[in-house]
Image (cartoon, rainbow over all chains, first blue to last red; front, side, top):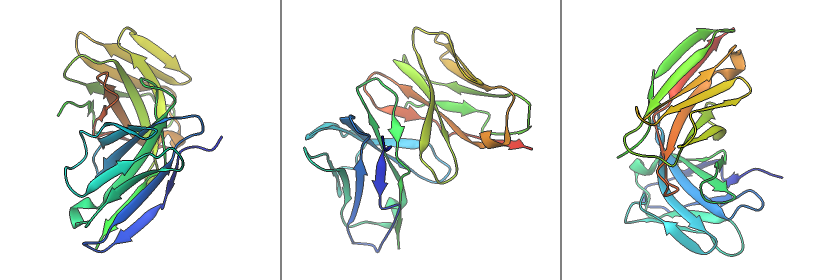
Length: 113
Length: 110
C-alpha cells in the first residue's frame, strides 16, 4: 500500500506563472488535506477536501489559490500568478475518516524566482 | 490563531538519555497528536491522544495530556541518534483542521 504520493518533489516557477501541485492519497482514503510550511515554521492548514467536495477552505488565500479532488485522479492544488511569497513546502495528507490520524506525503518544495 | 506551542524549541541530548517536550494550547480540543519530521521530508504520525485520555504509550514514546492545564508532553526514552528530528504537536479542535506548533528540534548525539 503506497503512501501519500506528491509530485513534483521540487517545482520552480517565475513570478506570474502557474503552479500545479498533485497529491494521490493513500489507497482507501477519501479525505485529503493541504498544508503549507514556511522555513522554521509549523504547518499551516489550507484546505480539506473529500471526493468532489471542498469541505473547509478557510486556510486558503482568497485569490489565486484553488484546490480540487475529482472523482477520478489526484487532488490538485493550483496557484495562479505565483509571487515570491508563495515559496514554501506544500504538504498533502490523507486520512481514512474524519478525526483520524493523517498520513503525509513528502511534500512539494515550490520556489518562485 | 489557535495552535499548539512546543517548549523547549531546541533540545540536544546524549544517546541513551530521555527527551521531554511540552506543548500547550488555548481552548478545548478533540484530540492532540504528535508528529515527527526529518529534514526536508513529510511528517510522520507518532501518537494521538484523545481529550478523554490522560496518558498513552507507544514503544519508547509516552504522551500525557492535562486538559485542565491545556498541555501535553512527549517523552522519548532511551534516545537514539535516529531520533534526531523535529517534533510537532498538533491540536484538533474537532473541525479536522490540525493546528501545528512551530516544532521542537531534537538532536541526539551518538
